[in-house]
Length: 368
Image (cartoon, rainbow, N blue to C red; front, side, top):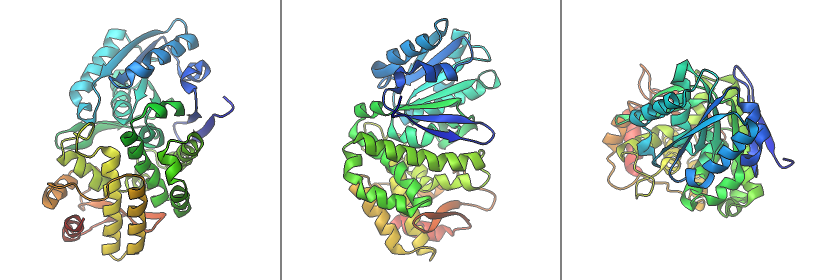
């Protein structure tokens, strides 16, 4: 446990983000997060064979009398649906889960979002323990309590804010992560430098090769710093009434790309979430430059870093700008005044901007 790092999330819902190797075996961490007699492990068909038995053994060590069941869904964003959500609720019913039960979300962002939403709704809210096994989930989706499922019309349109009781991020699980998924997580890491601290971008540029090779110490540093940035914002703005919206830098464009591609990124030629966000960040930076808000050189610096990390920076072939714009009008960040974008004044200084003309958005899409 000496190598474990802890990032504290303050505010209305206080919890710890524990980061380090071997944490799946730390019964004490899980015991602290469990309150009742029931636990449902939610995972997918890629992650469950690797880690579910190990987590179940740790849970039994933590609480010998615990009644445990598993709900395992197929992998992929296309499974983050209301139908799967209902199946997860059925699994809680079969378990006989009471108000002090815990849902243990073991996997990436899809599992964390769906399991968290089920926990938010079962008996009007039970505990969720986030156990992320992807870099993207460790630095973003497991932290902050955003839970949701997708609709054909758009991503994350049905959900709830439901903070976890704990986040337990075992960095050794990243060793089984496919290279594409590691790169996707790095897109969200880059996001924190883009919106909060240009010096972090400089650090990422200097450590790009080590991050890509999966060097443990460098990845742990990147995760801890990313979680620190997010924890500070979430503590001040838990329900996204203000500055938390900055965390969506690149996501308005990225979610539109994902929706237009039918959420088919996993195992296909379509972009996964991290890849779509990488493209979206470049588009947001170039839109900032086109509006005269930021230097064009900052946008190209961002694109170059993402390319070094093996991430795409252009809109996939076959996606029409008008269709993407229509998707963006359903984005959660849109309001009565129209589209809102997270743009920047320069690297490390982002802002929420309303009233961006459609023509400017279309021009940037057509040029990318």
